[in-house]
Length: 569
Image 1: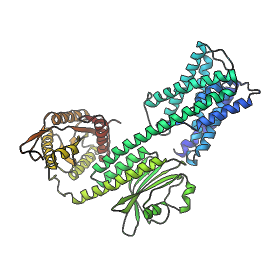
Image 2: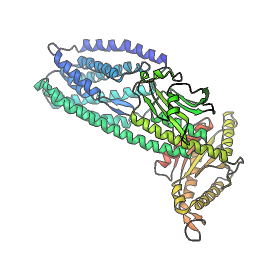
Image 3: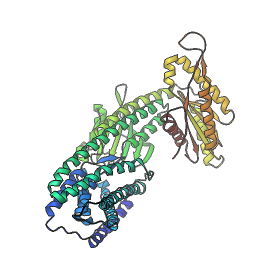
Image 4: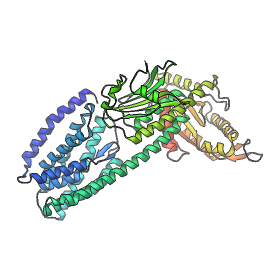
């Protein structure tokens, strides 16, 4: 977040928070004489529960609303608001939020104030009262309404924060909202029971209800953590697959940087390469607070610090805060850096580069994230080596020697030319179809690689005949093909892609050079296709390729294969 936004946020908090507190006190003054110990006990219980949130889509869901319900029903909206604000302060102190992220305090403070004020007002408008009162259907209806308003206001305030502060948009009715409703259905009944027992038994009720409440928080937190780790592992597997499929070093680096910065929330990411035999280093990819920078050209000596340790010891590093690594005297680190992870890129038992992830927050990274980064960096090293070997040995002519199609080099030049032509206003649009044969490795393993080559050759011929003079067909690499369609809109492109998919799936491929007995045999294959169009989906070649690739893997491969998917923003 830029300085102007932070300043505006602090100004808003400085004006709104005392105004809301004053208005709340004037409208509903509390009566707490002689209840100081009880209120302190509630505060302690709320603080303990606040330290055990679960994380939903990088957003903490605090279970303090259950305890705050009992406080609200017992002492009114003002005391509930004060206790929640105190817990917010305690939580941020516990998290040791760095200077760069101090703006989280006014955000959370205002959010909980609005939640308290709006939900409490709704309760009072329905005729609800605080303090000891009879248990009745009307009372239950009032509490349920209060609970739903808390859930809704909290969710939509978070939506507002994501959109206008973090620039991330989500559907209003997302899975996060469903999850919040679920957690609310668990939390608020416990809060209601705590209130009823507190009215009857006094402070001992906090022990009877508070202990199970804390246990419930721990169980749900552990459950979500395990789910998140599983999700990370699945995503890491897919990223590794995508990296090893890329046959261009630049694409490998771009895919790695894009995927890793989406998987792990960071403020900075650097991919470092060894520039020469003297050990000078070069930053070949950067990610700075949401912006990717290619080939920044920064060249520097290894010097001292984190990178020197990684290069010399061939080991990963993880630091939770600046005080743990600043003694290394690392001038490479950006201002405000706190947590960091550094992993070496190793090829042929030699460190040839490093990946560095940095956050402004203390304790930003978990141990399992370091393990995943280490795993993906190993994939990166292999993928870069494969890509370099491919680029070194690839023929310089424009045709693929196996299929007779245009090769990747020609495709890249042709796409760049067409995109430039379009950007200059001499072409209306450019569409792209990316095609990948499903389970092609299984074909090779079953029938032999020569049979696989026959399928590639026949598929190339089918694509050439199907497209004709509508566009350019090229072999993208491996079992992937790409089709450039100038002056073709997305709807027409989708129709062509669907025709290609259908023709592949319906007509088997006849192969001669298989590992079984002599004679030709039919082999049934399918393909997954992704499409993207410029200028609506992208305005530069790499983005158009990336979006078609994403459509293919996300919309077609992950959806069951043998499908056509179009890129959607």
